[in-house]
Image (cartoon, rainbow, N blue to C red; front, side, top):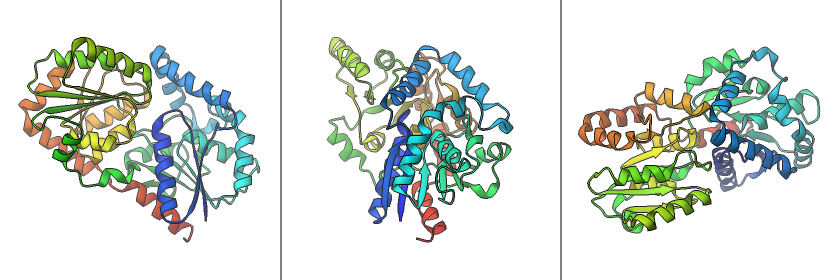
Amino acid sequence: MKILVLTMTCGNGHNAVANALEESFLSRGISCKVCNIFQSNKRLEALNNDAYSFACSKIPHLYDFVWNKQRKRNPEKRYTGLGTYFIKRALIPNANEINTYAPDVIICTHVYASNIVCNLKRNHKINESIPTYTFLLDYCVCPYFEDSILVDGVFTPSEITHPELISRGYNEKQLHAFGYPVNNKYYAEFDKTALRNKLNIPQDAMVALSLNGGNGIGKAEKLISILNKSQIPNLYIINVCGKNQKLKNKIDRLVKKENYQNVLNMGFSKNIEELMASSDILFTRAGSTFLSEAVQMNLVPIIRERTQANETLNKKLFLKQNICYEMKKLSDAPKVIKAILNSPEDLATKKQNLKSFNKPYGLNKVIEYILKANKQ
């Protein structure tokens, strides 16, 4: 059996899921290959990535307007408009990849990928009988999902998204709420004391973990300054910049200038699960990956200010489910921490709600479903 996983570099969550799928299939002795849908055209790949980064950081209101307008477009107009335009130049390269590799199953971790496969099937450019599955990785339905209705299945993090998917043309048999496909490493048993020793963090510290996206939208350096001026006892801050080297350098200079002894500033980290397990508080944007990992770790997230598009809808759902805290502006950070310290009952309620909301082992459920559906 050969599995082809199609992903996209815009946003690390799609790649994290693709890599987790590859690792899991290979561990079962099943051939699996991960491909970036724009890998044959580096200029096009850079254009998509740079445009996304620019829109999020420089023109967020315009980005939100366009995203929401496209999300609400008439689903009967599928296969037309921006969604089709964005994938146009990637169609032939991906047809060549699929026809050359000849997979038994195709799995897509981004809607552009499943839109490409459905377009190719509809136009008879690839074997139309190849079972194809796609992921909805947000707690809302993003634009252009109506273009993927030819897939055999959609794996979602929650049933909450299903009514809208059905309104876009899907049927119930296509939809599978297996939970977010969190990497299996988040299910390990963690020793908080040992992890803090490993990171040289005082055992009696109140550890705040700040996770930042690659676009540097969240002003992490200002959050660190505000928290250090708040006089919260024994506060220790772990800040993760991801692949944003510019942000890391900026915070390194801040830490040195202010002589902060309570800040661990990190770049890209492969052990976010250990950082979460070491922490008491989590500051994060409302991307579905970080939120879902927090859910699995039973770590109630504090969602940062200035959410955009899908993040705003993710945040609204988490607030409705009473499984997060919210910052409306940067200066709210100390107030939220003090509210947590002053109301342990509220924190306990949110943690219990997290357990009820959680759908564990989503990745394993997806793999088991695919293998069973395809008689492996």
